[in-house]
Length: 218
Ligand SMILES: [Zn+2]
Image 1 (cartoon, rainbow, N blue to C red):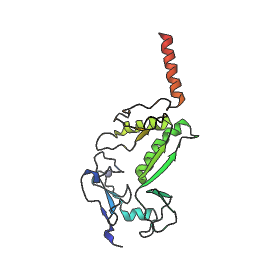
Image 2 (image 1 turned 90 degrees about the horizontal axis):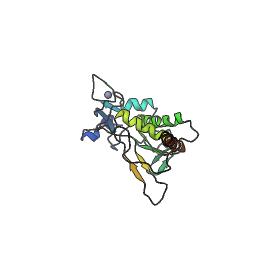
Image 3 (image 1 turned 45 degrees about the vertical axis):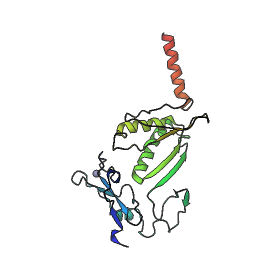
Image 4 (image 1 turned 135 degrees about the vertical axis):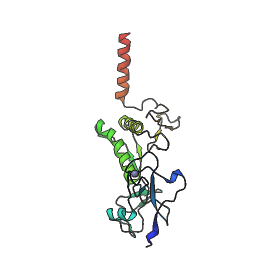
């Protein structure tokens, strides 16, 4: 195999530079290695930060393959991957480790304590950033959503070029209404509201209580 099969992605504008997974410098200081045959990235952490003295992060494809026990010719995906709608079998040696994986989860909040529900947002983000795995999550958990809003605000994710890793689509209960996207603002708030009956009854009960208290005071 050619030694030059993997190179740092040539600069073609800022969309070919990334946020360093190590120093997290807000400017995009990170170059990723690509496979010259496929043009695909190896992994979201396999690359070099250009802040040589301040950060010095450099994770080479060779190191990455060694660390993950992936031989160059027969990488074996550890989990079943969904790619373009097709499942790839675990033991298949034909397939390369592909950069993009999407995991679909339905109601991950089931049977979880509220504190753990909100931690799911951190968990999904962490896995996404470390392993370049995307999640498509169907949820009714206000805790997960609220935590994502806090994360967006804390990281100022909507401030360019600091892209927001979260995206929310709301599906109204009433099928006559179309699903719509809720955009996060940099302070973590959404630009639109949820429809009635989405949030947990606890929140609406709290609101009811507040209203009642106010009425009593008046
Ligand atoms: Zn760095």
